[in-house]
Structures are given as structure tokens and as C-alpha cells.
Length: 332
Ligand code: UDP
Ligand code: MG
Image 1: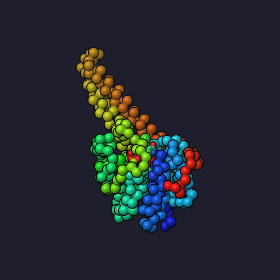
Image 2: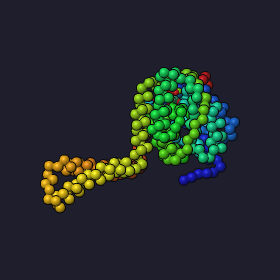
Image 3: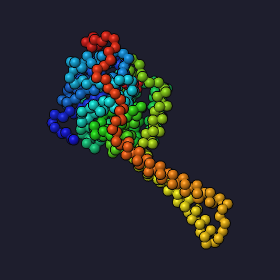
Image 4: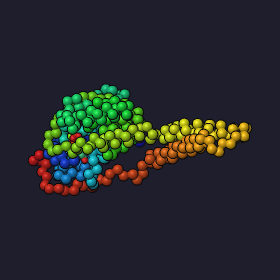
């Protein structure tokens, strides 16, 4: 059902939160300060990814006095992507904005990006580009540069900065994109396969205000593995019959041709074909070809099942946050 009533929500801001107790108060203040003057209707969805500090309790308390704040509480630490997916599923806005909870992204950039999306109806996704990225070179910027190059080449969606969390989406462009693991950085590439148009715009970036990054260098390996998966998704997931079936027919044709030649020799020329290498080749190619075509058919069946997500839970939500320690929002 498409709702287009004048009071439909315009903007949902989605922020994954894992142990950000020192940043939360300032985050809410700056998001509110940025959004109120825009005159747009908006909500802020903060997804607590089962923090082990007081973040969840703080969110619950903050929400009592801020009607625009909607906290969600994941039942265990699922990671940034699944937390974002929970936010996407809950988001009611026509436009969805994502950013990090540690204020490395600047909420003040959001209104400009929203205006840009209004002015460019042909664009579905604006991806932030941390041109002046405030992270260490050797363990963050350099691996990112390599990853961005690889992702761009392999997905065909060329961005300088896939890893920037500050992104603005028309909600329909990400409706069919499902993310988990480290897939959040691939959203533009995944959405592009459904036809989304993506542009990249420089945004500000700051050093982490409080707390620590939740990631180490091992993330780079996970990103590379996820990239292989994404490549597989993009290439094969839509039409496995085209991929496997194409390879199968390429083998099947020379296989059948070889067997045909042998049959002609046997029937019309009366030759003994028993020990001919061509026989082995023909049989092998034909069998492999048939198997590949069968795999393509199986793949098509799997896809049908894949697209019926009934019962596929990506995450579980708590009704209320698990309480940890004392938290007093007014002192933050
Ligand atoms: N985050 C999360 N779950 C996790 C790890 C991180 O929700 O398991 C959130 C975190 O609170 C932050 C965002 O994801 O809002 C990005 O994390 P971080 O700042 O540590 O990543 P970095 O900026 O170092 O890439
Ligand atoms: Mg950060």
C-alpha cells in the first residue's frame, strides 16, 4: 500500500548504537538541532545492539521526554548491519538517513543532503564521502582505499567511500535490500541492482568523540569475504540459469558433437570406437554440461524460496532494554 498523505512521515534517521553512552546525549542534541529548523517531520530510530554499558537504559530514559526518539533494543549483539536492518524495518519515513552514533558523522550535514535529494528526483541514494577522513592511515584509511577500489570494480558502482555511514536513501530504494554481517557498506551496490541511482557527496568527518572504535584490522578480511558474497549475489542470484546454464551448454555442445562424430563413424563407416579418447571426452563434457544445466535449474528453484522470506528472522527485539547500571540522562 502506498501512503501519500500530507502528514506521512518525511524522514527516518537510523543510528546503530553499541556502547555509546558518552556520545548519546550529544548525538540526540545535535540531531534535534539539525532537524528542527528544516520544518520536516522526522524521527530518530536508535537501535541498541545489546550494549554492555548504559546506552540502552539511557535511550529508554531519553525517549520519555523526546517523542521523536524511537529506541529499539536487540536481544544480543548482532553487529552494525543487522542493527541497521532493524532500523530500516521500523523506519516509517519516505527518506531514510543513516549515520554512526559516535558523532564521527556530523548531523548538521543531514539537511543539506535532504535538500539535494529533493532537488534531484532522479537520484535515489546520496552516499557520504569522508574526503577529510579523521582516522589513522595505516590501519583504517589505507585498507579502506583498497577495499573501495575493489568494491567499485567488482560491483560496477564506483564510489570513493563505501564505508561512510552517513547516507540518505529514498526508502523504496532499499526496501528489498537485506543486510547482515558487514553488508551495510554494500547497500549502494545492492540497491543499484534494483535500479537505484547513487551519487557521492563530500561530508564532514570528525575523530571519534568518546569511546573506542568497535572494529580492528580483522574487519578488512570480513569485508573482502563479504565482497565475494556480494559479487556472487549480484552476478548469479537473479538468474542462476543464465550463469550455470550458459556454462553447461558451452560444455554440452562440444560433448554432443564429439559423440555425434563417433556415432557417424560407427554406424556409417563401421569403425570400432571403443578405445577412442574422443569417446571419453564426449561423455565427460556431456555429463558435466547436463549437471551444470541441472544446477542452474536448482538455483532457480532456490531463488524462489529465497524470495519468500516467511519465517526468516534476521534479529530479535526485546520489549524493553536490559538494565545496566544507573543512568541519568539529565547529567549527560
Ligand atoms: N556498532 C553497532 N554494533 C557493533 C559495532 C558497532 O551497532 O557491533 C555501531 C557503533 O555504535 C557506531 C557504528 O556502529 O554507531 C560504527 O561503529 P564504530 O564507530 O565503532 O566504527 P568505525 O567508525 O570505527 O568504523
Ligand atoms: Mg566510528
